Length: 191
Image 1: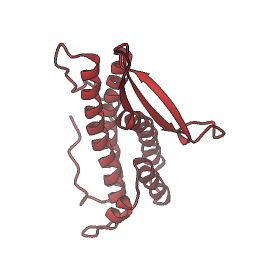
Image 2: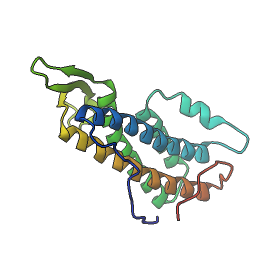
Image 3: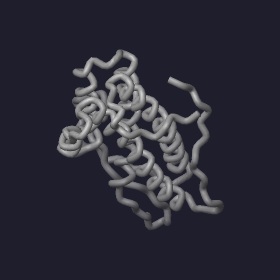
Image 4: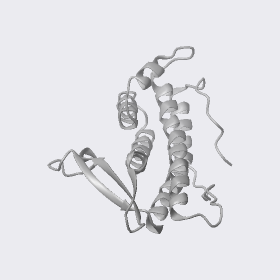
């Protein structure tokens, strides 16, 4: 896979409060991850469909979460006997996507609370299956203050998502080449 110097497309307007930066960051993270998830869809199309057929759409739409859709892609990739390199790249991107989706889900489903003292925080929940220790509660409450650290966390996640976009584009092209599924439309690889 090619190595490219990465420069984030994210530019913040000057003078925004932490709260405003977090809100913009959440929107940017959602849009970035939607684009990354699209490439998993393209990989599934290359693996589970034929030109003029739409089997992959039924498979994709029958899954109710990002996690389930990506696990489906991993299972289909495994049985399609891709090269070990292609499968390893898909697995790597899946792991990145799971971590970024967990953060996105927290911010998108958390409550925004302003305390009596004027301090703000997000209060939400995370599912226990995202943790290595399976003996923990299925759902965990979590609080994050609205501050510079939260802004930095979101910015780092957005940068990882944008880097993952280029990685997923490379992976989709690799899978397309290995499967001969040139009917699956892809943007060109960057120079």
